[in-house]
Length: 434
Image (cartoon, rainbow, N blue to C red; front, side, top):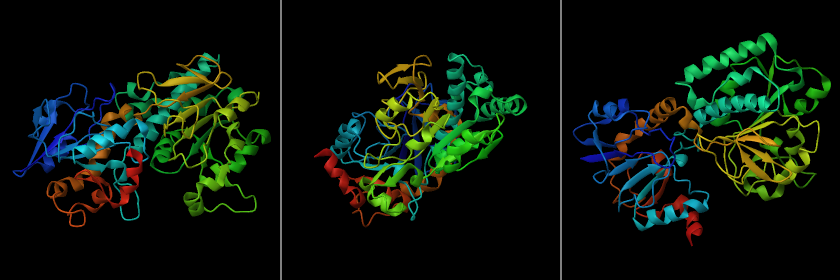
């Protein structure tokens, strides 16, 4: 018999998600597969719901062979030779999690990284991205309303709440529909028009953000048309203007005679410069929804913001930094914020942040665990993607060599550590801990 453990989430007070929901436990549990679930008072699915489908509620997972979590696990949690699935945030050599990686190696564990579970083409299969985009856009509309209110302008967005304060996504969408109707009938204050939302990226996170924008009357315009929109006067205050920025809009070759080529950009990011700054002053709300690594040019630097906020015609009021890489693509995002303290105002002149909506400068919403603001819907979607692979995972003999492992192929691609050793695709990570 194999025992699957579902652990509590303790990295954040407001983390309420779970990797496998009770209905899927019910479908997987059998005489050969047992579930033990750590007791949690805050998890969106209650202990009783797991008990009702035959899981055992426990205060530890000592008897579990395979442990499913969501966020990072405490460094003293790991036990020798067991299998763990979670978002480890180690694949880019994140300094703050290198002690965690070292401990997993010492304990000779099998680490399956959700972020790397993908099909043969590299398309991710297990993710919360859609819900990060949805919650991020709800929060950014809320932030836009609250920031304008502080600055002395009432808008229809002032009635919105932070995403987690709605009982469900449906309730949040109903509130947004009321705002959309108000704007359709009466518009936004003329001095704020055109209301432009720039979105970096076009993957799951971006599509989640667009799902919320599509509740409103909106029109997509190209980045080049954005540059002319305000000056042309060809807009109205009852429409939201959406702009999708792809790689070629964000970066450009340092060689002015060269054309942008996507694969060359991926392979040679050091040969590219920022191309995004030209657009920023025309964006009301910037939604940062794209993957970024330190080898790529930043999207927005602190130096750029210092110049931007000297421009009286600058429109940028809110950044929804869904990507949330501290000191990363948006350099002024110094931290990932907490659900209970979600926004800060960054002063480009002093280069200091102030938590809350007050202060001089740029309002940033950078909640690190946005999907947990919609914990039930996010957990259901995640578990549905994970469910088809779980039973086969319990049949895997991790004592076999990597080449002999009979494990679901998407999971094998995501197996970073096999009995404490880096697997072939992840040997580059050795340099992070040497």
